Length: 430
Length: 179
Picture 1 (cartoon, rainbow over the protein chains, first blue to last red):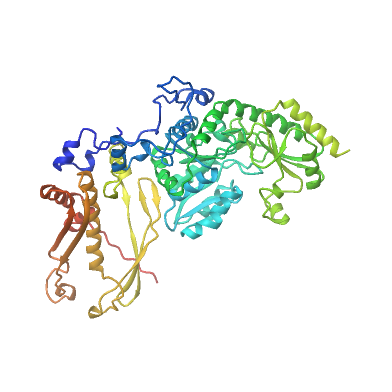
Picture 2: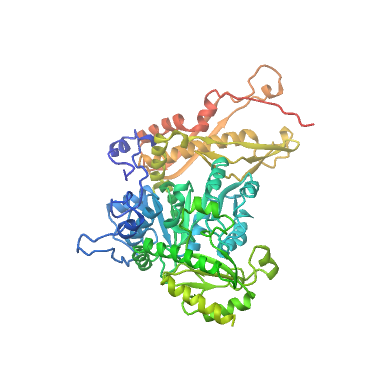
């Protein structure tokens, strides 16, 4: 039931109404089409869910609703009066069919009741956290967290009268010890950057239940194709859509998914912070997501083959990849990732940063650029990009060793990638 | 939103509670610390609503007028109690008015009572508490007299603080000595 006063208008008029009479219930969505493709696989959901085929013209595929505003009518005025503007088209910062379409696809892929798309991953993260933090609240997060998120937690929370403790992302005892009386949220990344440590999700969820906390996970490195965080009991999952979800390195975006109840709490924060996704970016994201499952399958399998190749190369000192038995948490990887280990690899090359730079110059296929999750392989060094604010000593303390390279394995032909690395490594050690 | 009250959210909450009564469980608490003389400070404890913690990072000072031993730097306990009752009745009134489609332009609420301090002083068997409280709602809005009467009846039935004060409450006390 959408309307609060459906069939009880007369009670409203004669004054016999009370809150127990109100009709509106939470429903999944908001959505343009009733079909949710719940029983289908990710490949099918990627293609079909959320897509809006225009009944007026018969156009197949979601049109780009490039408009900032919508005609007002009786229904929209009622929605404004009741405070249920998220379910009506009123203004594009509030909602737009292009946003709803891609949100529905994301909800299907995440097994979520509701999702919101944002103009960037950081817009999703900051709006989500601010929506749930009360004055005086505390967050427990990870020392290995993405730099943008770290800056928000470390530099900005204090200004709002909130605080954060950074812990190990893997040690549940340390995480539990950091929980305070005023802790409200456990915020972690499912797979850390760049050393690909795995956060024990079930343990975090148990802690969340024990202390009545919300567990929020950034799943950017894994995506819902590899692990559906909500199925593991996480309250909310956020993603940088810029990465694997879009996959073409041609837009900036963010997502949050979870129960309708919780996502509805984030929506007013989105309105205030203003990080809505533009309709054209929504179109690109929805279109890109049609090949999401296909792409992820290839990212995963290419990364595993390349990780094996690198690990067996005499000039590579160490490879970080959850799918390798040498990964410190390989057992947890098998249990939590179930063979879908992501397309991210980090590795250390003989000869330190100098040889690492030399390799990047020699490689013909991977592009030397920050970001990840694109169809093309992307490669960079953490020491002068993501962890550049740390001294060499500080970098070593958290495991950023000399010669560490981060590689986002693309969907190129795996033999071509291996050949490229073979020639590159051979050349720099001649 | 009418009266800036999100009735759709209230409707969703009411229906959620019908399906899962645990979502209506709200635990509250305060912690008082004696400062000096009649002056105390109160910190609100975290709430748990349903299964989740809400951080309540608020505090306030309580004192007494100089005529009753204080330094008159803050409202006294009776005023906080009456204020808490009035605030609760006002929330109930406003949400109810919104459901009844009444637009409220102005709402003021007075609560008055007379204590006989003989009870506090132990001079005779006079009860220490208020024997009677009077409230007056001053309302300006587009409702009819009949609607407002209905609303007041609802407020006295559904306001938690009104009912805590009006009805007998089971109070369990304990003393812990810290040497």
